[in-house]
Image (cartoon, rainbow, N blue to C red; front, top):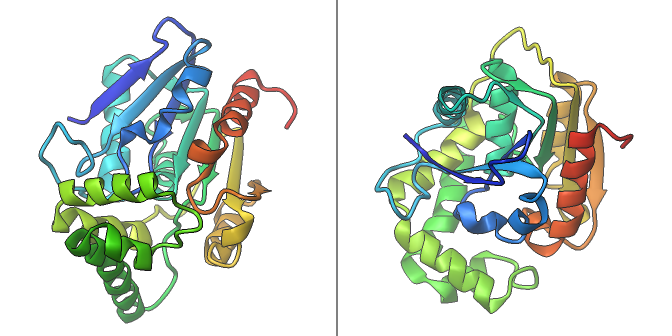
Amino acid sequence: MMKIHEFGKENRKNVLLIHPSMVMWDYFEYVIPLLEKDHHLFIPALPGYDPDEKSDFSSVEKIASDLADQLSEMGIDELDCIYGCSMGGSIVIRILADHKIKVRNALIDGGITPYQLPWILTRLIAVRDFLLIYMGKLGGIRLLEKAFNTAEYSDEDLKYIADVLKMVSTKTIWNTFDSCNNYSMPEPLKVNCERIIYSYAKEEERARKWDISYMKKKFPDTVFEKYEGVGHGGLAVLKPEILSDKIRTLCENDPL
């Protein structure tokens, strides 16, 4: 079972926060104090990314299903808001499709949608992404500086990523990229979520082109929002106040 960290247990509004790849659950350390006074936060340490549990990332489908099951076992049958970034966004999308738990509002931040490409191309993309990260695992900070845009990451950020890469297994790295790029979705797709927002950074607009197109096609009522100066996955770290205010607004059902 996944370890699910809880904060603000006395509060009525239930919020699930799902972190991206190559970080741990503490990715939300700046968001937690802004929300825990008024919201019951659930933050899973995903398989493969839990420093206290030796495990491998399995798949988007399995983790989405397991998360919903665990929340149900904890007596949670409805979420006022669910947030997921990048890999976490993939898991949110699959949770919405599974209908195992009722979700009122979903905030998908740069979420990765399934590639609609021939099988051989998906293999080549998975290999490319895997090698990019595996290079950082082998070479540490020096190679990470080449692999990542260092304008978006401080030395402290790069050290954090390097430490996470030392912890995660090669299998977790491969499964993460392979599954996030190619996870399955049920057909026909029916979603009962009241509001879905897909947000992304202005700097990554071109990179998210396929994902935005997928959301428009499969989730036609999605609202799209663009942020400046955060890069991919930077909202929770660089602008936690904005993210917290957005989640609070969704939970309160105020006009967007």
